[in-house]
Length: 474
Image (cartoon, rainbow, N blue to C red):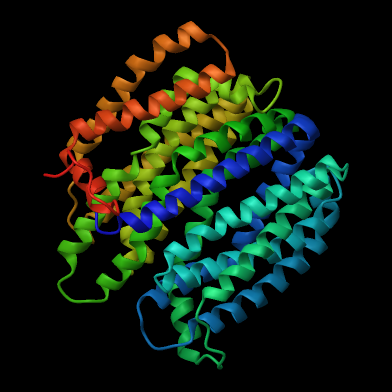
């Protein structure tokens, strides 16, 4: 895989981020409790939707236009456009403050507006770095943000600052990451032309809906749940979401790494074969960690969830359902990534619109009847149909070869892992130390099995290691 090393850097960065986030979440849930942590989750969900309104596809458009290596100062044009939208959204949030505070359950609007400014700037800086083919730099910003956030949050929450400390930690961590990102970004401080604004708008007018689609997948269920269940239930649901998100890290890394390359290729003549090859690579490795993650969760998930605190293990079946959702969504994202990369955001808009509509309808129908199971099922069904839509429309822009054999080998390796780990789980019961040991053994069995089963995987590992390993050569 040509861009494997960049993907690995991205992935390892997300591993660091995930462990930092996991540690921080455990501290928050244990000190704040499910009720207060649920309130924190609700504010973060509202922040995510406010970010969409304050961005409207600007960061995505900047990433796309900068990656094309065309003339135009898209960085400054993007910053000015972003600043204007932020002011509009901030004024709107202040206007509806009483109703917003009532929904969130406390006086949180002032925190929300401050966090919004930091998050919008962070997204824009990431878009600039990705567009400048500095994915290896932008990849480390998120773990830097998360690690800084966790340190400050833990210090303040333990000191008795409660939710205010949790929000302050998020803000400080984000600003630290933004500062580092700006150091590496190339910015020409000159006035952008009208053409730069126009080209950003022509892409953003379709791509903005991609943010809604992504956020619908990540938090529509949480938003709907907030109307029907307590913050305690939401806290348990989100804990399962946080854990299952770890499985999707490598899929996200592949997608982020490939986009600038696909975008650059798409601006050249006769690039369809290479674009098709990159899509096949993305599909091949999208489930590399999600597939064993689902099987591992089925065996060990209840004990892992109990780390968050009392009552969180009740989300065991939610964890499994959402794991399948992440697998399907990972494949969907690879299809959409190619469609965006070849400059067809209009097609992506159709996919995203159908996904959002279906997800919303399923949530409002099933969540009141079945609670968090209805929400999880709605998310999974939407991801499955979204993957089918992505496949259908991606065929119109490039040739598609689904790597069924490689995906099958990943499933087989996960099956062998299950054969080894399941007896161990029956022996150790609910021992946390035993589960940690079994997780390491399971990961080792999975990757050794995959190396034995897949010639392509062996070749990919050898190609991306800085030194040769005897036995991996073809």
